[in-house]
Length: 117
Image 1 (cartoon, one colour):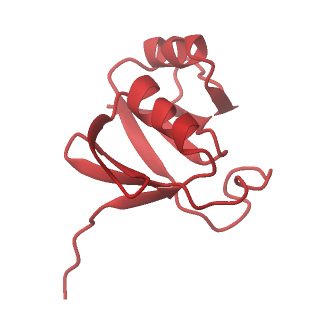
Image 2 (cartoon, rainbow, N blue to C red; image 1 turned 90 degrees about the horizontal axis):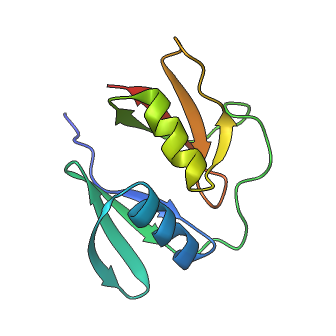
Image 3 (cartoon, rainbow, N blue to C red; image 1 turned 45 degrees about the horizontal axis):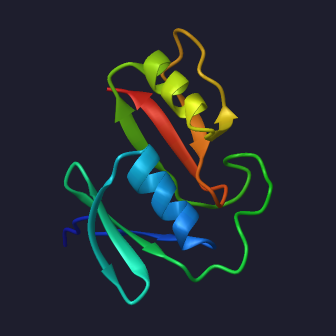
């Protein structure tokens, strides 16, 4: 039996904030809106923003509890870090020269790793 990854659902508390973050800051492309949910695509991978959460991710350090996160690949980590800083993105860990990546938080505190391509 072989499985293939499909769409990633991102359950959020504020659809407008999440749409702005994923579409306008991370540059995911808008596909469609369906019953209050927004489908986006990034490099062939689909993401569905679902506005059903009543609260954001609990404040806890990354990997201290079970969760799913995903990576975004970047050609230039330093430039990516500065771009995200300029857009007011919250960081779980800051960029350090020579490190393979850094972590950001979406509007609900979900962790995304930015790694070198």
